[in-house]
Length: 74
Image (cartoon, rainbow, N blue to C red; front, top):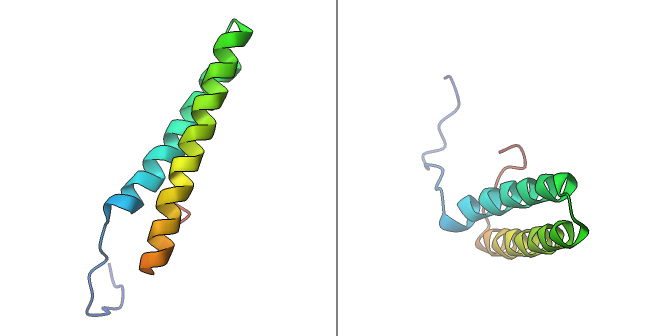
């Protein structure tokens, strides 16, 4: 509540939202891969999780280029 004011509001960008979305999606797909009954389904989930992590990294790089890296705690 008593945070110092910087005169600038924290701006939530689409890329920062995408970073957290794709990180959550990758974790969800990893969990599904761990519970999969058949190996081919688990492999598909793992591939999808890898793609989700790549998309998160792409958005993270855009945020870093913008100069406003998202919080790692979010």
